[in-house]
Length: 268
Length: 196
Image (cartoon, rainbow over all chains, first blue to last red; front, side):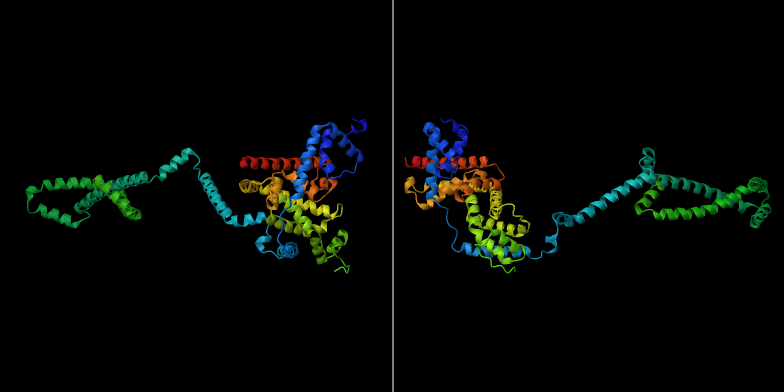
């Protein structure tokens, strides 16, 4: 092979074969190099033959033509599409993709914000009320436990009832004392005189009784403050009764029934 | 209007200048001048008239919207070719699976039709075989083959359109023809086997 063709490698010569077949090689040196290589290289010769066959097939084959008048109508179609594209777009069409997505999702975002805000608000309320402190939380839980509260109220009511009963008894007792006291009640003294006159046999009993009563009365006079206190308590009792009634009425019927049941159980 | 009498034989530069100055007819001239070439470039890559029609319109719409930015660094012909080839290759890439399915179905139809020899093949069968052979090519080879064989573009122009080296374009063209040859051979072989 001539030295001047050595500057072309086989690959280069091969890739120029299609142009060699169609006489499109303007470089004579390259054309000569291909011809020389074809004489000595059967593989390149084979490639050349195959390419020639393909070109002969391509020359005799054509693509199906487009419909008649296609090219005369094409500019009209293009102009129509351009005019359509240039028409002013609606508000939504002019929006960018970001806004097209954002606008419909605004209600959802607002709802999420409200939920988050509410949950944060609850948390902050808990923190403010100290509910985070386990000891305080337990105390609050206890305070807020409805069953325990009911029991407490019932206990309180039973205690109050016991106290009230006790006070009533004292009151009755005092009333009896008052009714028997000769200084306070003339009828009692008259009774006493009447008692003295008809049956003297019974007299020793009467002074004994009156002494006892007097003694009791002295004691009660001595404890006049106590009596006054009793009266005050009694007055207070009425006030408390009103409060208790109001409190009682504030309960639901079921709770009221429960309280009544508890009172019955307590035999008050 | 510019007042210049433009016709289809006017220089591209003159027509483009008139369009930039607001002459709407200048664009219509460009369409009439290049529509057939653009259509066939696209058609020989996408191998389907309806797709080629749609893509041709899109190419000219693209030209219409971007012609003001055309600086004239390259020939208008190269510019519009580049758009056409890119649109076609993008279309193929999008519809790759569908195209392969279509080709397979068409293959079955051709093989089961006539049992004629290659010389006796009618024009319809040849066209089908040609389209199938080109469809079997890789996208880049298909584009280069069309530009070189059918449009007689120089390798320099093709490399400018494809943004690849001239040597690479030569290699693509050679391999494209070899692959077409292989496809035809395979088709003939299957026909012979069916005949026997």
